[in-house]
Amino acid sequence: MKTNFKSKEFKRIMNEKGLNEAQMADKLGVDVSYIYRLLNGERQPGRKFILAAVDKLDLSVADLFESSIEEN
Image (tube, rainbow, N blue to C red; front, side):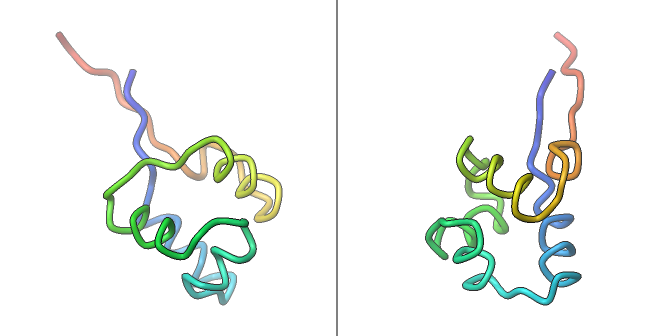
């Protein structure tokens, strides 16, 4: 099973909460460049980000990731 970060959904959540990239980074305790890389699909979020997002944004892990089954 492969999981992918829902960058478009995360951007929608940011907009819904009225937060820009810098404000979101501050709220989650990460560098703003980390947020940019997530939104641009250049990296997948790490444990610290996931835990902070679930806790501080009142999200579930399912809100942040989509999963797919890879066929061999």
